[in-house]
Amino acid sequence: MIALLRSGFSARRSRHGLWGGPLVIVVALLVILTLGTDQFATRENLFNLVAQAMPLFIAAIGQMFVILVGGLDLSIGSVISFSTAILSLDGPAVVLIPAVFLLAGLVGLINGLVITRLNVHPIIATLAMQYILLGITRFLRPVSGGEIPQVVIAAVQGSVFGVPLPLFWGLIAIGLAAKILYGSRFGLHLFGIGGGVAAGMEDAARTYGIRVDRNIVLAYVTCSLFAALAGAFLAGRIVSGDPNVGLLFELDAITAVAIGGTQLSGGVGSLHGTVLGAIVMVLLANGMNMANVSPFVQTAIKGGLLLAIVGLQSRKKMGL
Amino acid sequence: MANVLSHPIWRRLAAVPPAYYVFGLLLLTLWLARPNMLNPNVLGIFVRQVVPLGILVLGQLLVMRVRSIDLSGGGVILLINYIITSRTFPEASGLTFVIMALAIGGAVGLLNGYMVAKRRVSAVIVTLAVSIILVGLVQFLSSGKPPGDVPKYMNQIFDIKYGPLPLPVLFWLACTGVMWLVMQQSVYGRYVEAVGESAEAAAFSGVPVERTVVMAHVLAGLIAAVAALVQTGSIAVGSVRVGLDLPILAVAATILGGVVFGRGEGGVWGPFFGVLSFALLFVVMTVFGIDEPGKLIAQGLIILMAAILYGWRSKRG
Image 1 (cartoon, each protein chain N blue to C red):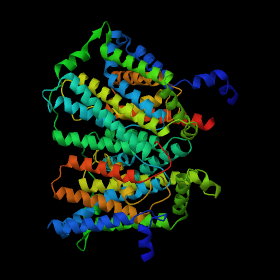
Image 2 (image 1 turned 90 degrees about the vertical axis):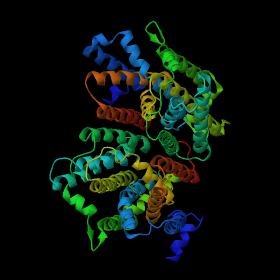
Image 3 (image 1 turned 180 degrees about the horizontal axis):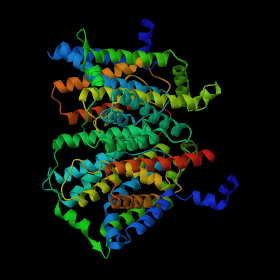
């Protein structure tokens, strides 16, 4: 445990990246918010915070898989809006819920195949997908509305023994991601592929017998599936389908991942870092809300944060 | 089959930027569906609408030639539009606005260029973040409400026509011509080409790679400022949403015109026809009653198809 903690701060290149920084920031923010305001450390606010944080949490974890292989998925915002639109259609929950994940998986599959087989840059491929999917979503649901299946609403807004269900969903998402990233061959291969990409040797992983293309495709599918989960969660919170709810979500997710010490060039990063990064984002938003900062200024501050964080990450490649 | 496809004529035809084919196809569609719309006066009005896009594309093709991208144009256009229409500076003359616009564009371009070339940050993330900051700033200043009117003289300049040719279209042609000369004749144009082909090889040959990329972003910022002035002239009342979809359209038009991250077969006129294709596309879509969702899907598909075409070609080559 102590060795792990130390690795988060050491400048020695660790596979997990420098996640000690966000840990310090989280602790500092918690202290500041607890001492500075009397509303923060209340039971309601904290539970509310967990529910608010969950979509970003889940989306950031998904984004992390793609970033680890040196890619980027700009389409998750649209996947989130799309998922809420699908859930708000007329139909039984047993059809709609599997449909959301099936279609999101398909989106990830298309992203991955276009990138690996057709040799398109990930940013361009997912940017195009962002627009195509946004168009389809606006076609399905031009303005927000519709009804979300009761099961979804109950799963998001319910509570067990006074503990709100979102907390459990968050723990499940983290457990699932931990299993995928640290407990499977796929997870290990992601680090291998990304490490090669970051060092400018795209073929490094292939020479060790890793099926590079297949793993990259799988990373994009995983990312889309997590985004769909985030979308389903949001649908349960806002109780309707909304074509704009996922707008700019991809950038929040990327910021969270980057704050958590994951390198956008690939190969270096961690789940705990990403979780801490998402917590930083959520605490900042909560703090700014309590300080009555205008939502427009909050957007600008988030943009500045993203700029500052990626400005600190050095890489070899110039350009995209 | 493979033999037929590798015939020199086919290769030659496949090397033509897709924009020319798309433009021809759309022209044919329009001619078949609505022949009466194909007169200079009607088309002049439609082409005039895409002039801001056409000017923005000139910057986009420059940064894309050096393997970068600029998505901050939307924020720049919004901010300049806000400054002109909000009456923050009631005494300012037209010239003052032009200077302010160029200063803003140049500053944003310099920031982009520094982050991309010196700090080696992903260009997409930098320019998107800059755009978000600018949009957030404008929305905060205006509290989300539309600012005031556009000064009358700007609309009047925008409305000048020489015969069937609107002044903005002529201005666009002139700008594209200047850009063509820069790319073709100047040392800087050669640098851009060299960096696009291979930044490493260019560095070894003594090309100032970082400075070339920074300069490309500064120029793109200045060009975005010019596009913002034209865009402002095209509308009567200020808006907090104006120009936000232009950067992505500019990327699409540039790719369609045969300029993709370091590869520049399309030169300057390929993207020019890419923009014209979009002008026609909007007409055709309006004619066939396709509304906003359809347009978004079409934009995405065009980017995807053009990128796939180039990815496929570079893999084969």
